[in-house]
Image (cartoon, rainbow, N blue to C red; front, top):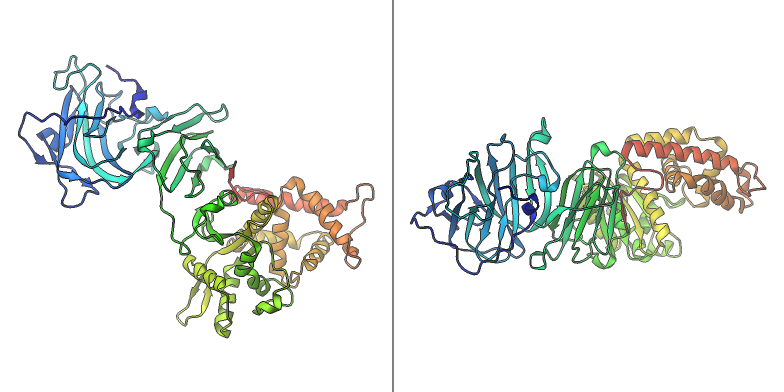
Length: 580
């Protein structure tokens, strides 16, 4: 009889109150397949030749029993993985009898024969099914039986010669969900391993998201502590949601597939039920247990949108947290509790690298104490190495926070020591913003500084920006250079000017570029009697400068097209994830 597909993902929750039946045969031999994660001194025995071999026929109801030589301890929040396949692989349909894994003292779990319960029509070549275990392992069995069938009874009708081929058992950390692991590049959709757990099933998402799943383990099996989520597949939009928070992922190039990662600390506690939905098929939807990376040796990997909304109470250090940009891992992003802490880390660097009259020298604290640094920061590897090398050469007394930064940059490979002990540039960049900034400014700073980071690490982007700056309308160029001088940038540094020009153009959506440059910034220049001469005629009716507005609107459109084609980003947006 055919078992409904919905049972493939549901635990049967048959809690055993007695012991498994003892085989009438005295046979007991070590199994012919491996048991990983149990240690060298733990042995698993089969209580029949068939059980020992792992080649279990599915042509009639039967019972295959296993026992350990001693109770096998299971770590907290552990799980048992069973790896298997159904033979013959090219047989149409499914076996007439379900097979159930029963763990004495725990529960019974019906094993899936394919991936149809997930809406995946292609049959996996192998399956690795992971079930939670709360106590030690002593006895377990695999039973072949349909509803109303008697174990050991002959088949009531003619059935094909199906075989359950057991490859291995493993003790693993608990996780929930599923993932397809393709193992043949030349035919990926025809040869994959399905890793899957109970408590995940198809969901009914909104019409614009035809693919969806829900994950809802009962309380006794839930994972507690640090959690992370992986979701991805051939989808340009993905939503992952709990009762308290929703993560929206957008990636415009659907043919390359989306990949949403929600790191430790970003999920609310007890995120059940956890839902995912998208406009394309999923390859992965997993909830896993993770440990906090050590601080300050390792960053947290995250998208800028998650960083903007990362709960501050989950920071590893109350002063600041630092992250690795998920899509551009050579860029570190620092988020500080306030401007004072940000200054402790970066203020002297700002004067050393960008401030007119200070560039290239290390200013003492008392010299710059009453001067403003920046409310957000960006630095390339070359300038960071020059800063710390200057301090080494002159034995300049850097602050404890600057020494922390030095160590973090070395760990990340952004700077490194040569054989002589000198600091040299590595690969990457650093950007920073602060929680003291209002939310609307934090978003703008993340975009502005994020594009600086990309400028530092990508030569093609630098060349594009240079060409746009060199061909910029002369009036517009005089205007923007006057503004940068007003901001105390060193306008003699062409690299810096090109970089700032690019970031100011891209920091807001294209739709806001004309107003930002042709009204707001031009208005600030007009307020200075000695600077207003760089402005073209003003439109008195609108109180704006249309020539400036149009010139920078054209630049915003050109830059936005470039970053969209190159990285799937747009003017005003460097994040792929929005947290609501």
